Amino acid sequence: MTTIAADAKRGLMAADSMTSTSDSWWPSTKVHRAGDALIGGAGEAAVIRQFVAWYSDGQRLPKPRLSDTFCALVLNPDGLFYWASNLVPEPIERGYHAIGSGGNAALGAMLAGANVKKAVEIATQVDTGSGGEVVLHKLKA
Image (tube, rainbow, N blue to C red; front, side, top):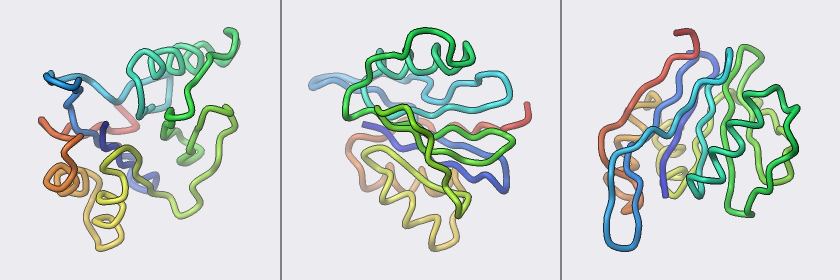
């Protein structure tokens, strides 16, 4: 449960910071830097860490076993890409997208003109699986 939104034109990715279980939640980092890329993953945290490690190593490690609920946005200098468990990157040609349980709410906000941070803030107001502080990441540190 999460909300991650990215905008390739502006080189920005934003995410909520709430990781939850059935009876608790805690703040966590959901966007990771891997070389010149930002990776925001939705799904189980352990699975996302496997993908980040594989991607960070230049995809030389054995391919991680990813659940069907895994997806990620990868923002790099070449653009914005959607990754799923098949490990085949799909370019997001419009240049912006949102994923996670609040992804549709964030995407709707972006279509209405919100920037990525505002879009995630809006999503946290309607998605019970997203919350905490919204953190903004810049492609170029």
